[in-house]
Length: 256
Image (tube, rainbow, N blue to C red):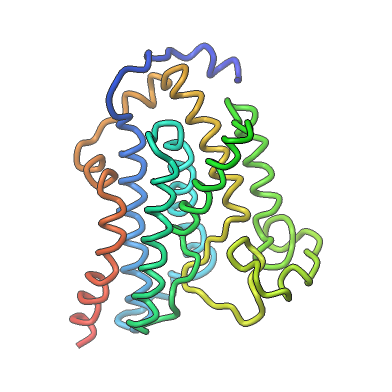
């Protein structure tokens, strides 16, 4: 813990919901809806969307998904039943894959962000059973650095922007490690968030969540309040499931 953080006032943990997590998740949900609306506008060529490309598109997408995964990790310490939570995520992920295959509007979603949160929650639960429970700021920083160091593993290299050494091709060619982060040749998904590297980001969140749950949230974080955003955050999964059909319907009307 840095001196700056240790000297910051901390509000004692009290019963009830940690509003800051709902707020952060709500911000990410609204950003996600806008992102997918822009994606659909470009997909159907409704209006010029030249700006919706690398690097803006990728940075925007990362800001959303990284927030989802980190907050999900933070919430691990607050959940009463993480095994049930993981099962719910994985079931919803399977339904999303089925629906996107049937709809055939774009490339189907396999191992998307909901799958990622489910698999990471399940693995974190298993690690918890064997005593691996990262706690505090320093472990969170180390885990985040490792996350960045293996970020491009799904693209065949270590590091960021494919600047690191290559990962052995055998891990991809074997064909059954796509779920983990080594996509098989020819694999396609419009939303691919495999267990690696995102497990490290999830564990970084869980390390901070455990600390904040035990010691109390920093006052500045506990003070964050916005009822509309918190409402969105509390209903994030439902909005995730419903927003894309709505976006597609609106874009279809605009395209006429």
